[in-house]
Length: 136
Ligand SMILES: [Zn+2]
Image (cartoon, rainbow, N blue to C red):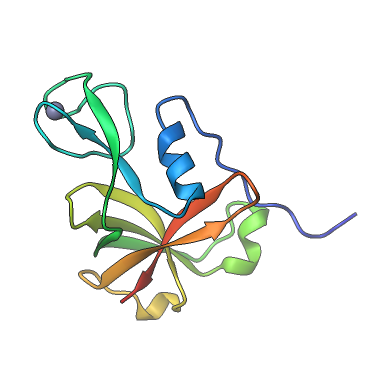
């Protein structure tokens, strides 16, 4: 028996499937409303700004800033034992929407609000790539 516990694999819902398909191709794509032209995250069946059901997924820059973050110092899931301490950050994309992710390639004490970041893709397996961020 392995000591290594696998990290949980994201399971796309019907609303988020285009997001995950784009991520697999290393593109960050968010729903964009055809009526009010705004983007949002997480994906949903209606635009949260105007309740329109007319939207499509469009690529975004993948660039933004750290709006806020927390550092996890405790192990809440065994799969993340080797990562502690790790940062979970709220990334504000240049296009406006905010999403939760991890900051890669730095230690937790190097992370500060307002730092510029860009998306990178963590290939979980042949089906799933997880959008994460690195400092720029
Ligand atoms: Zn809208």
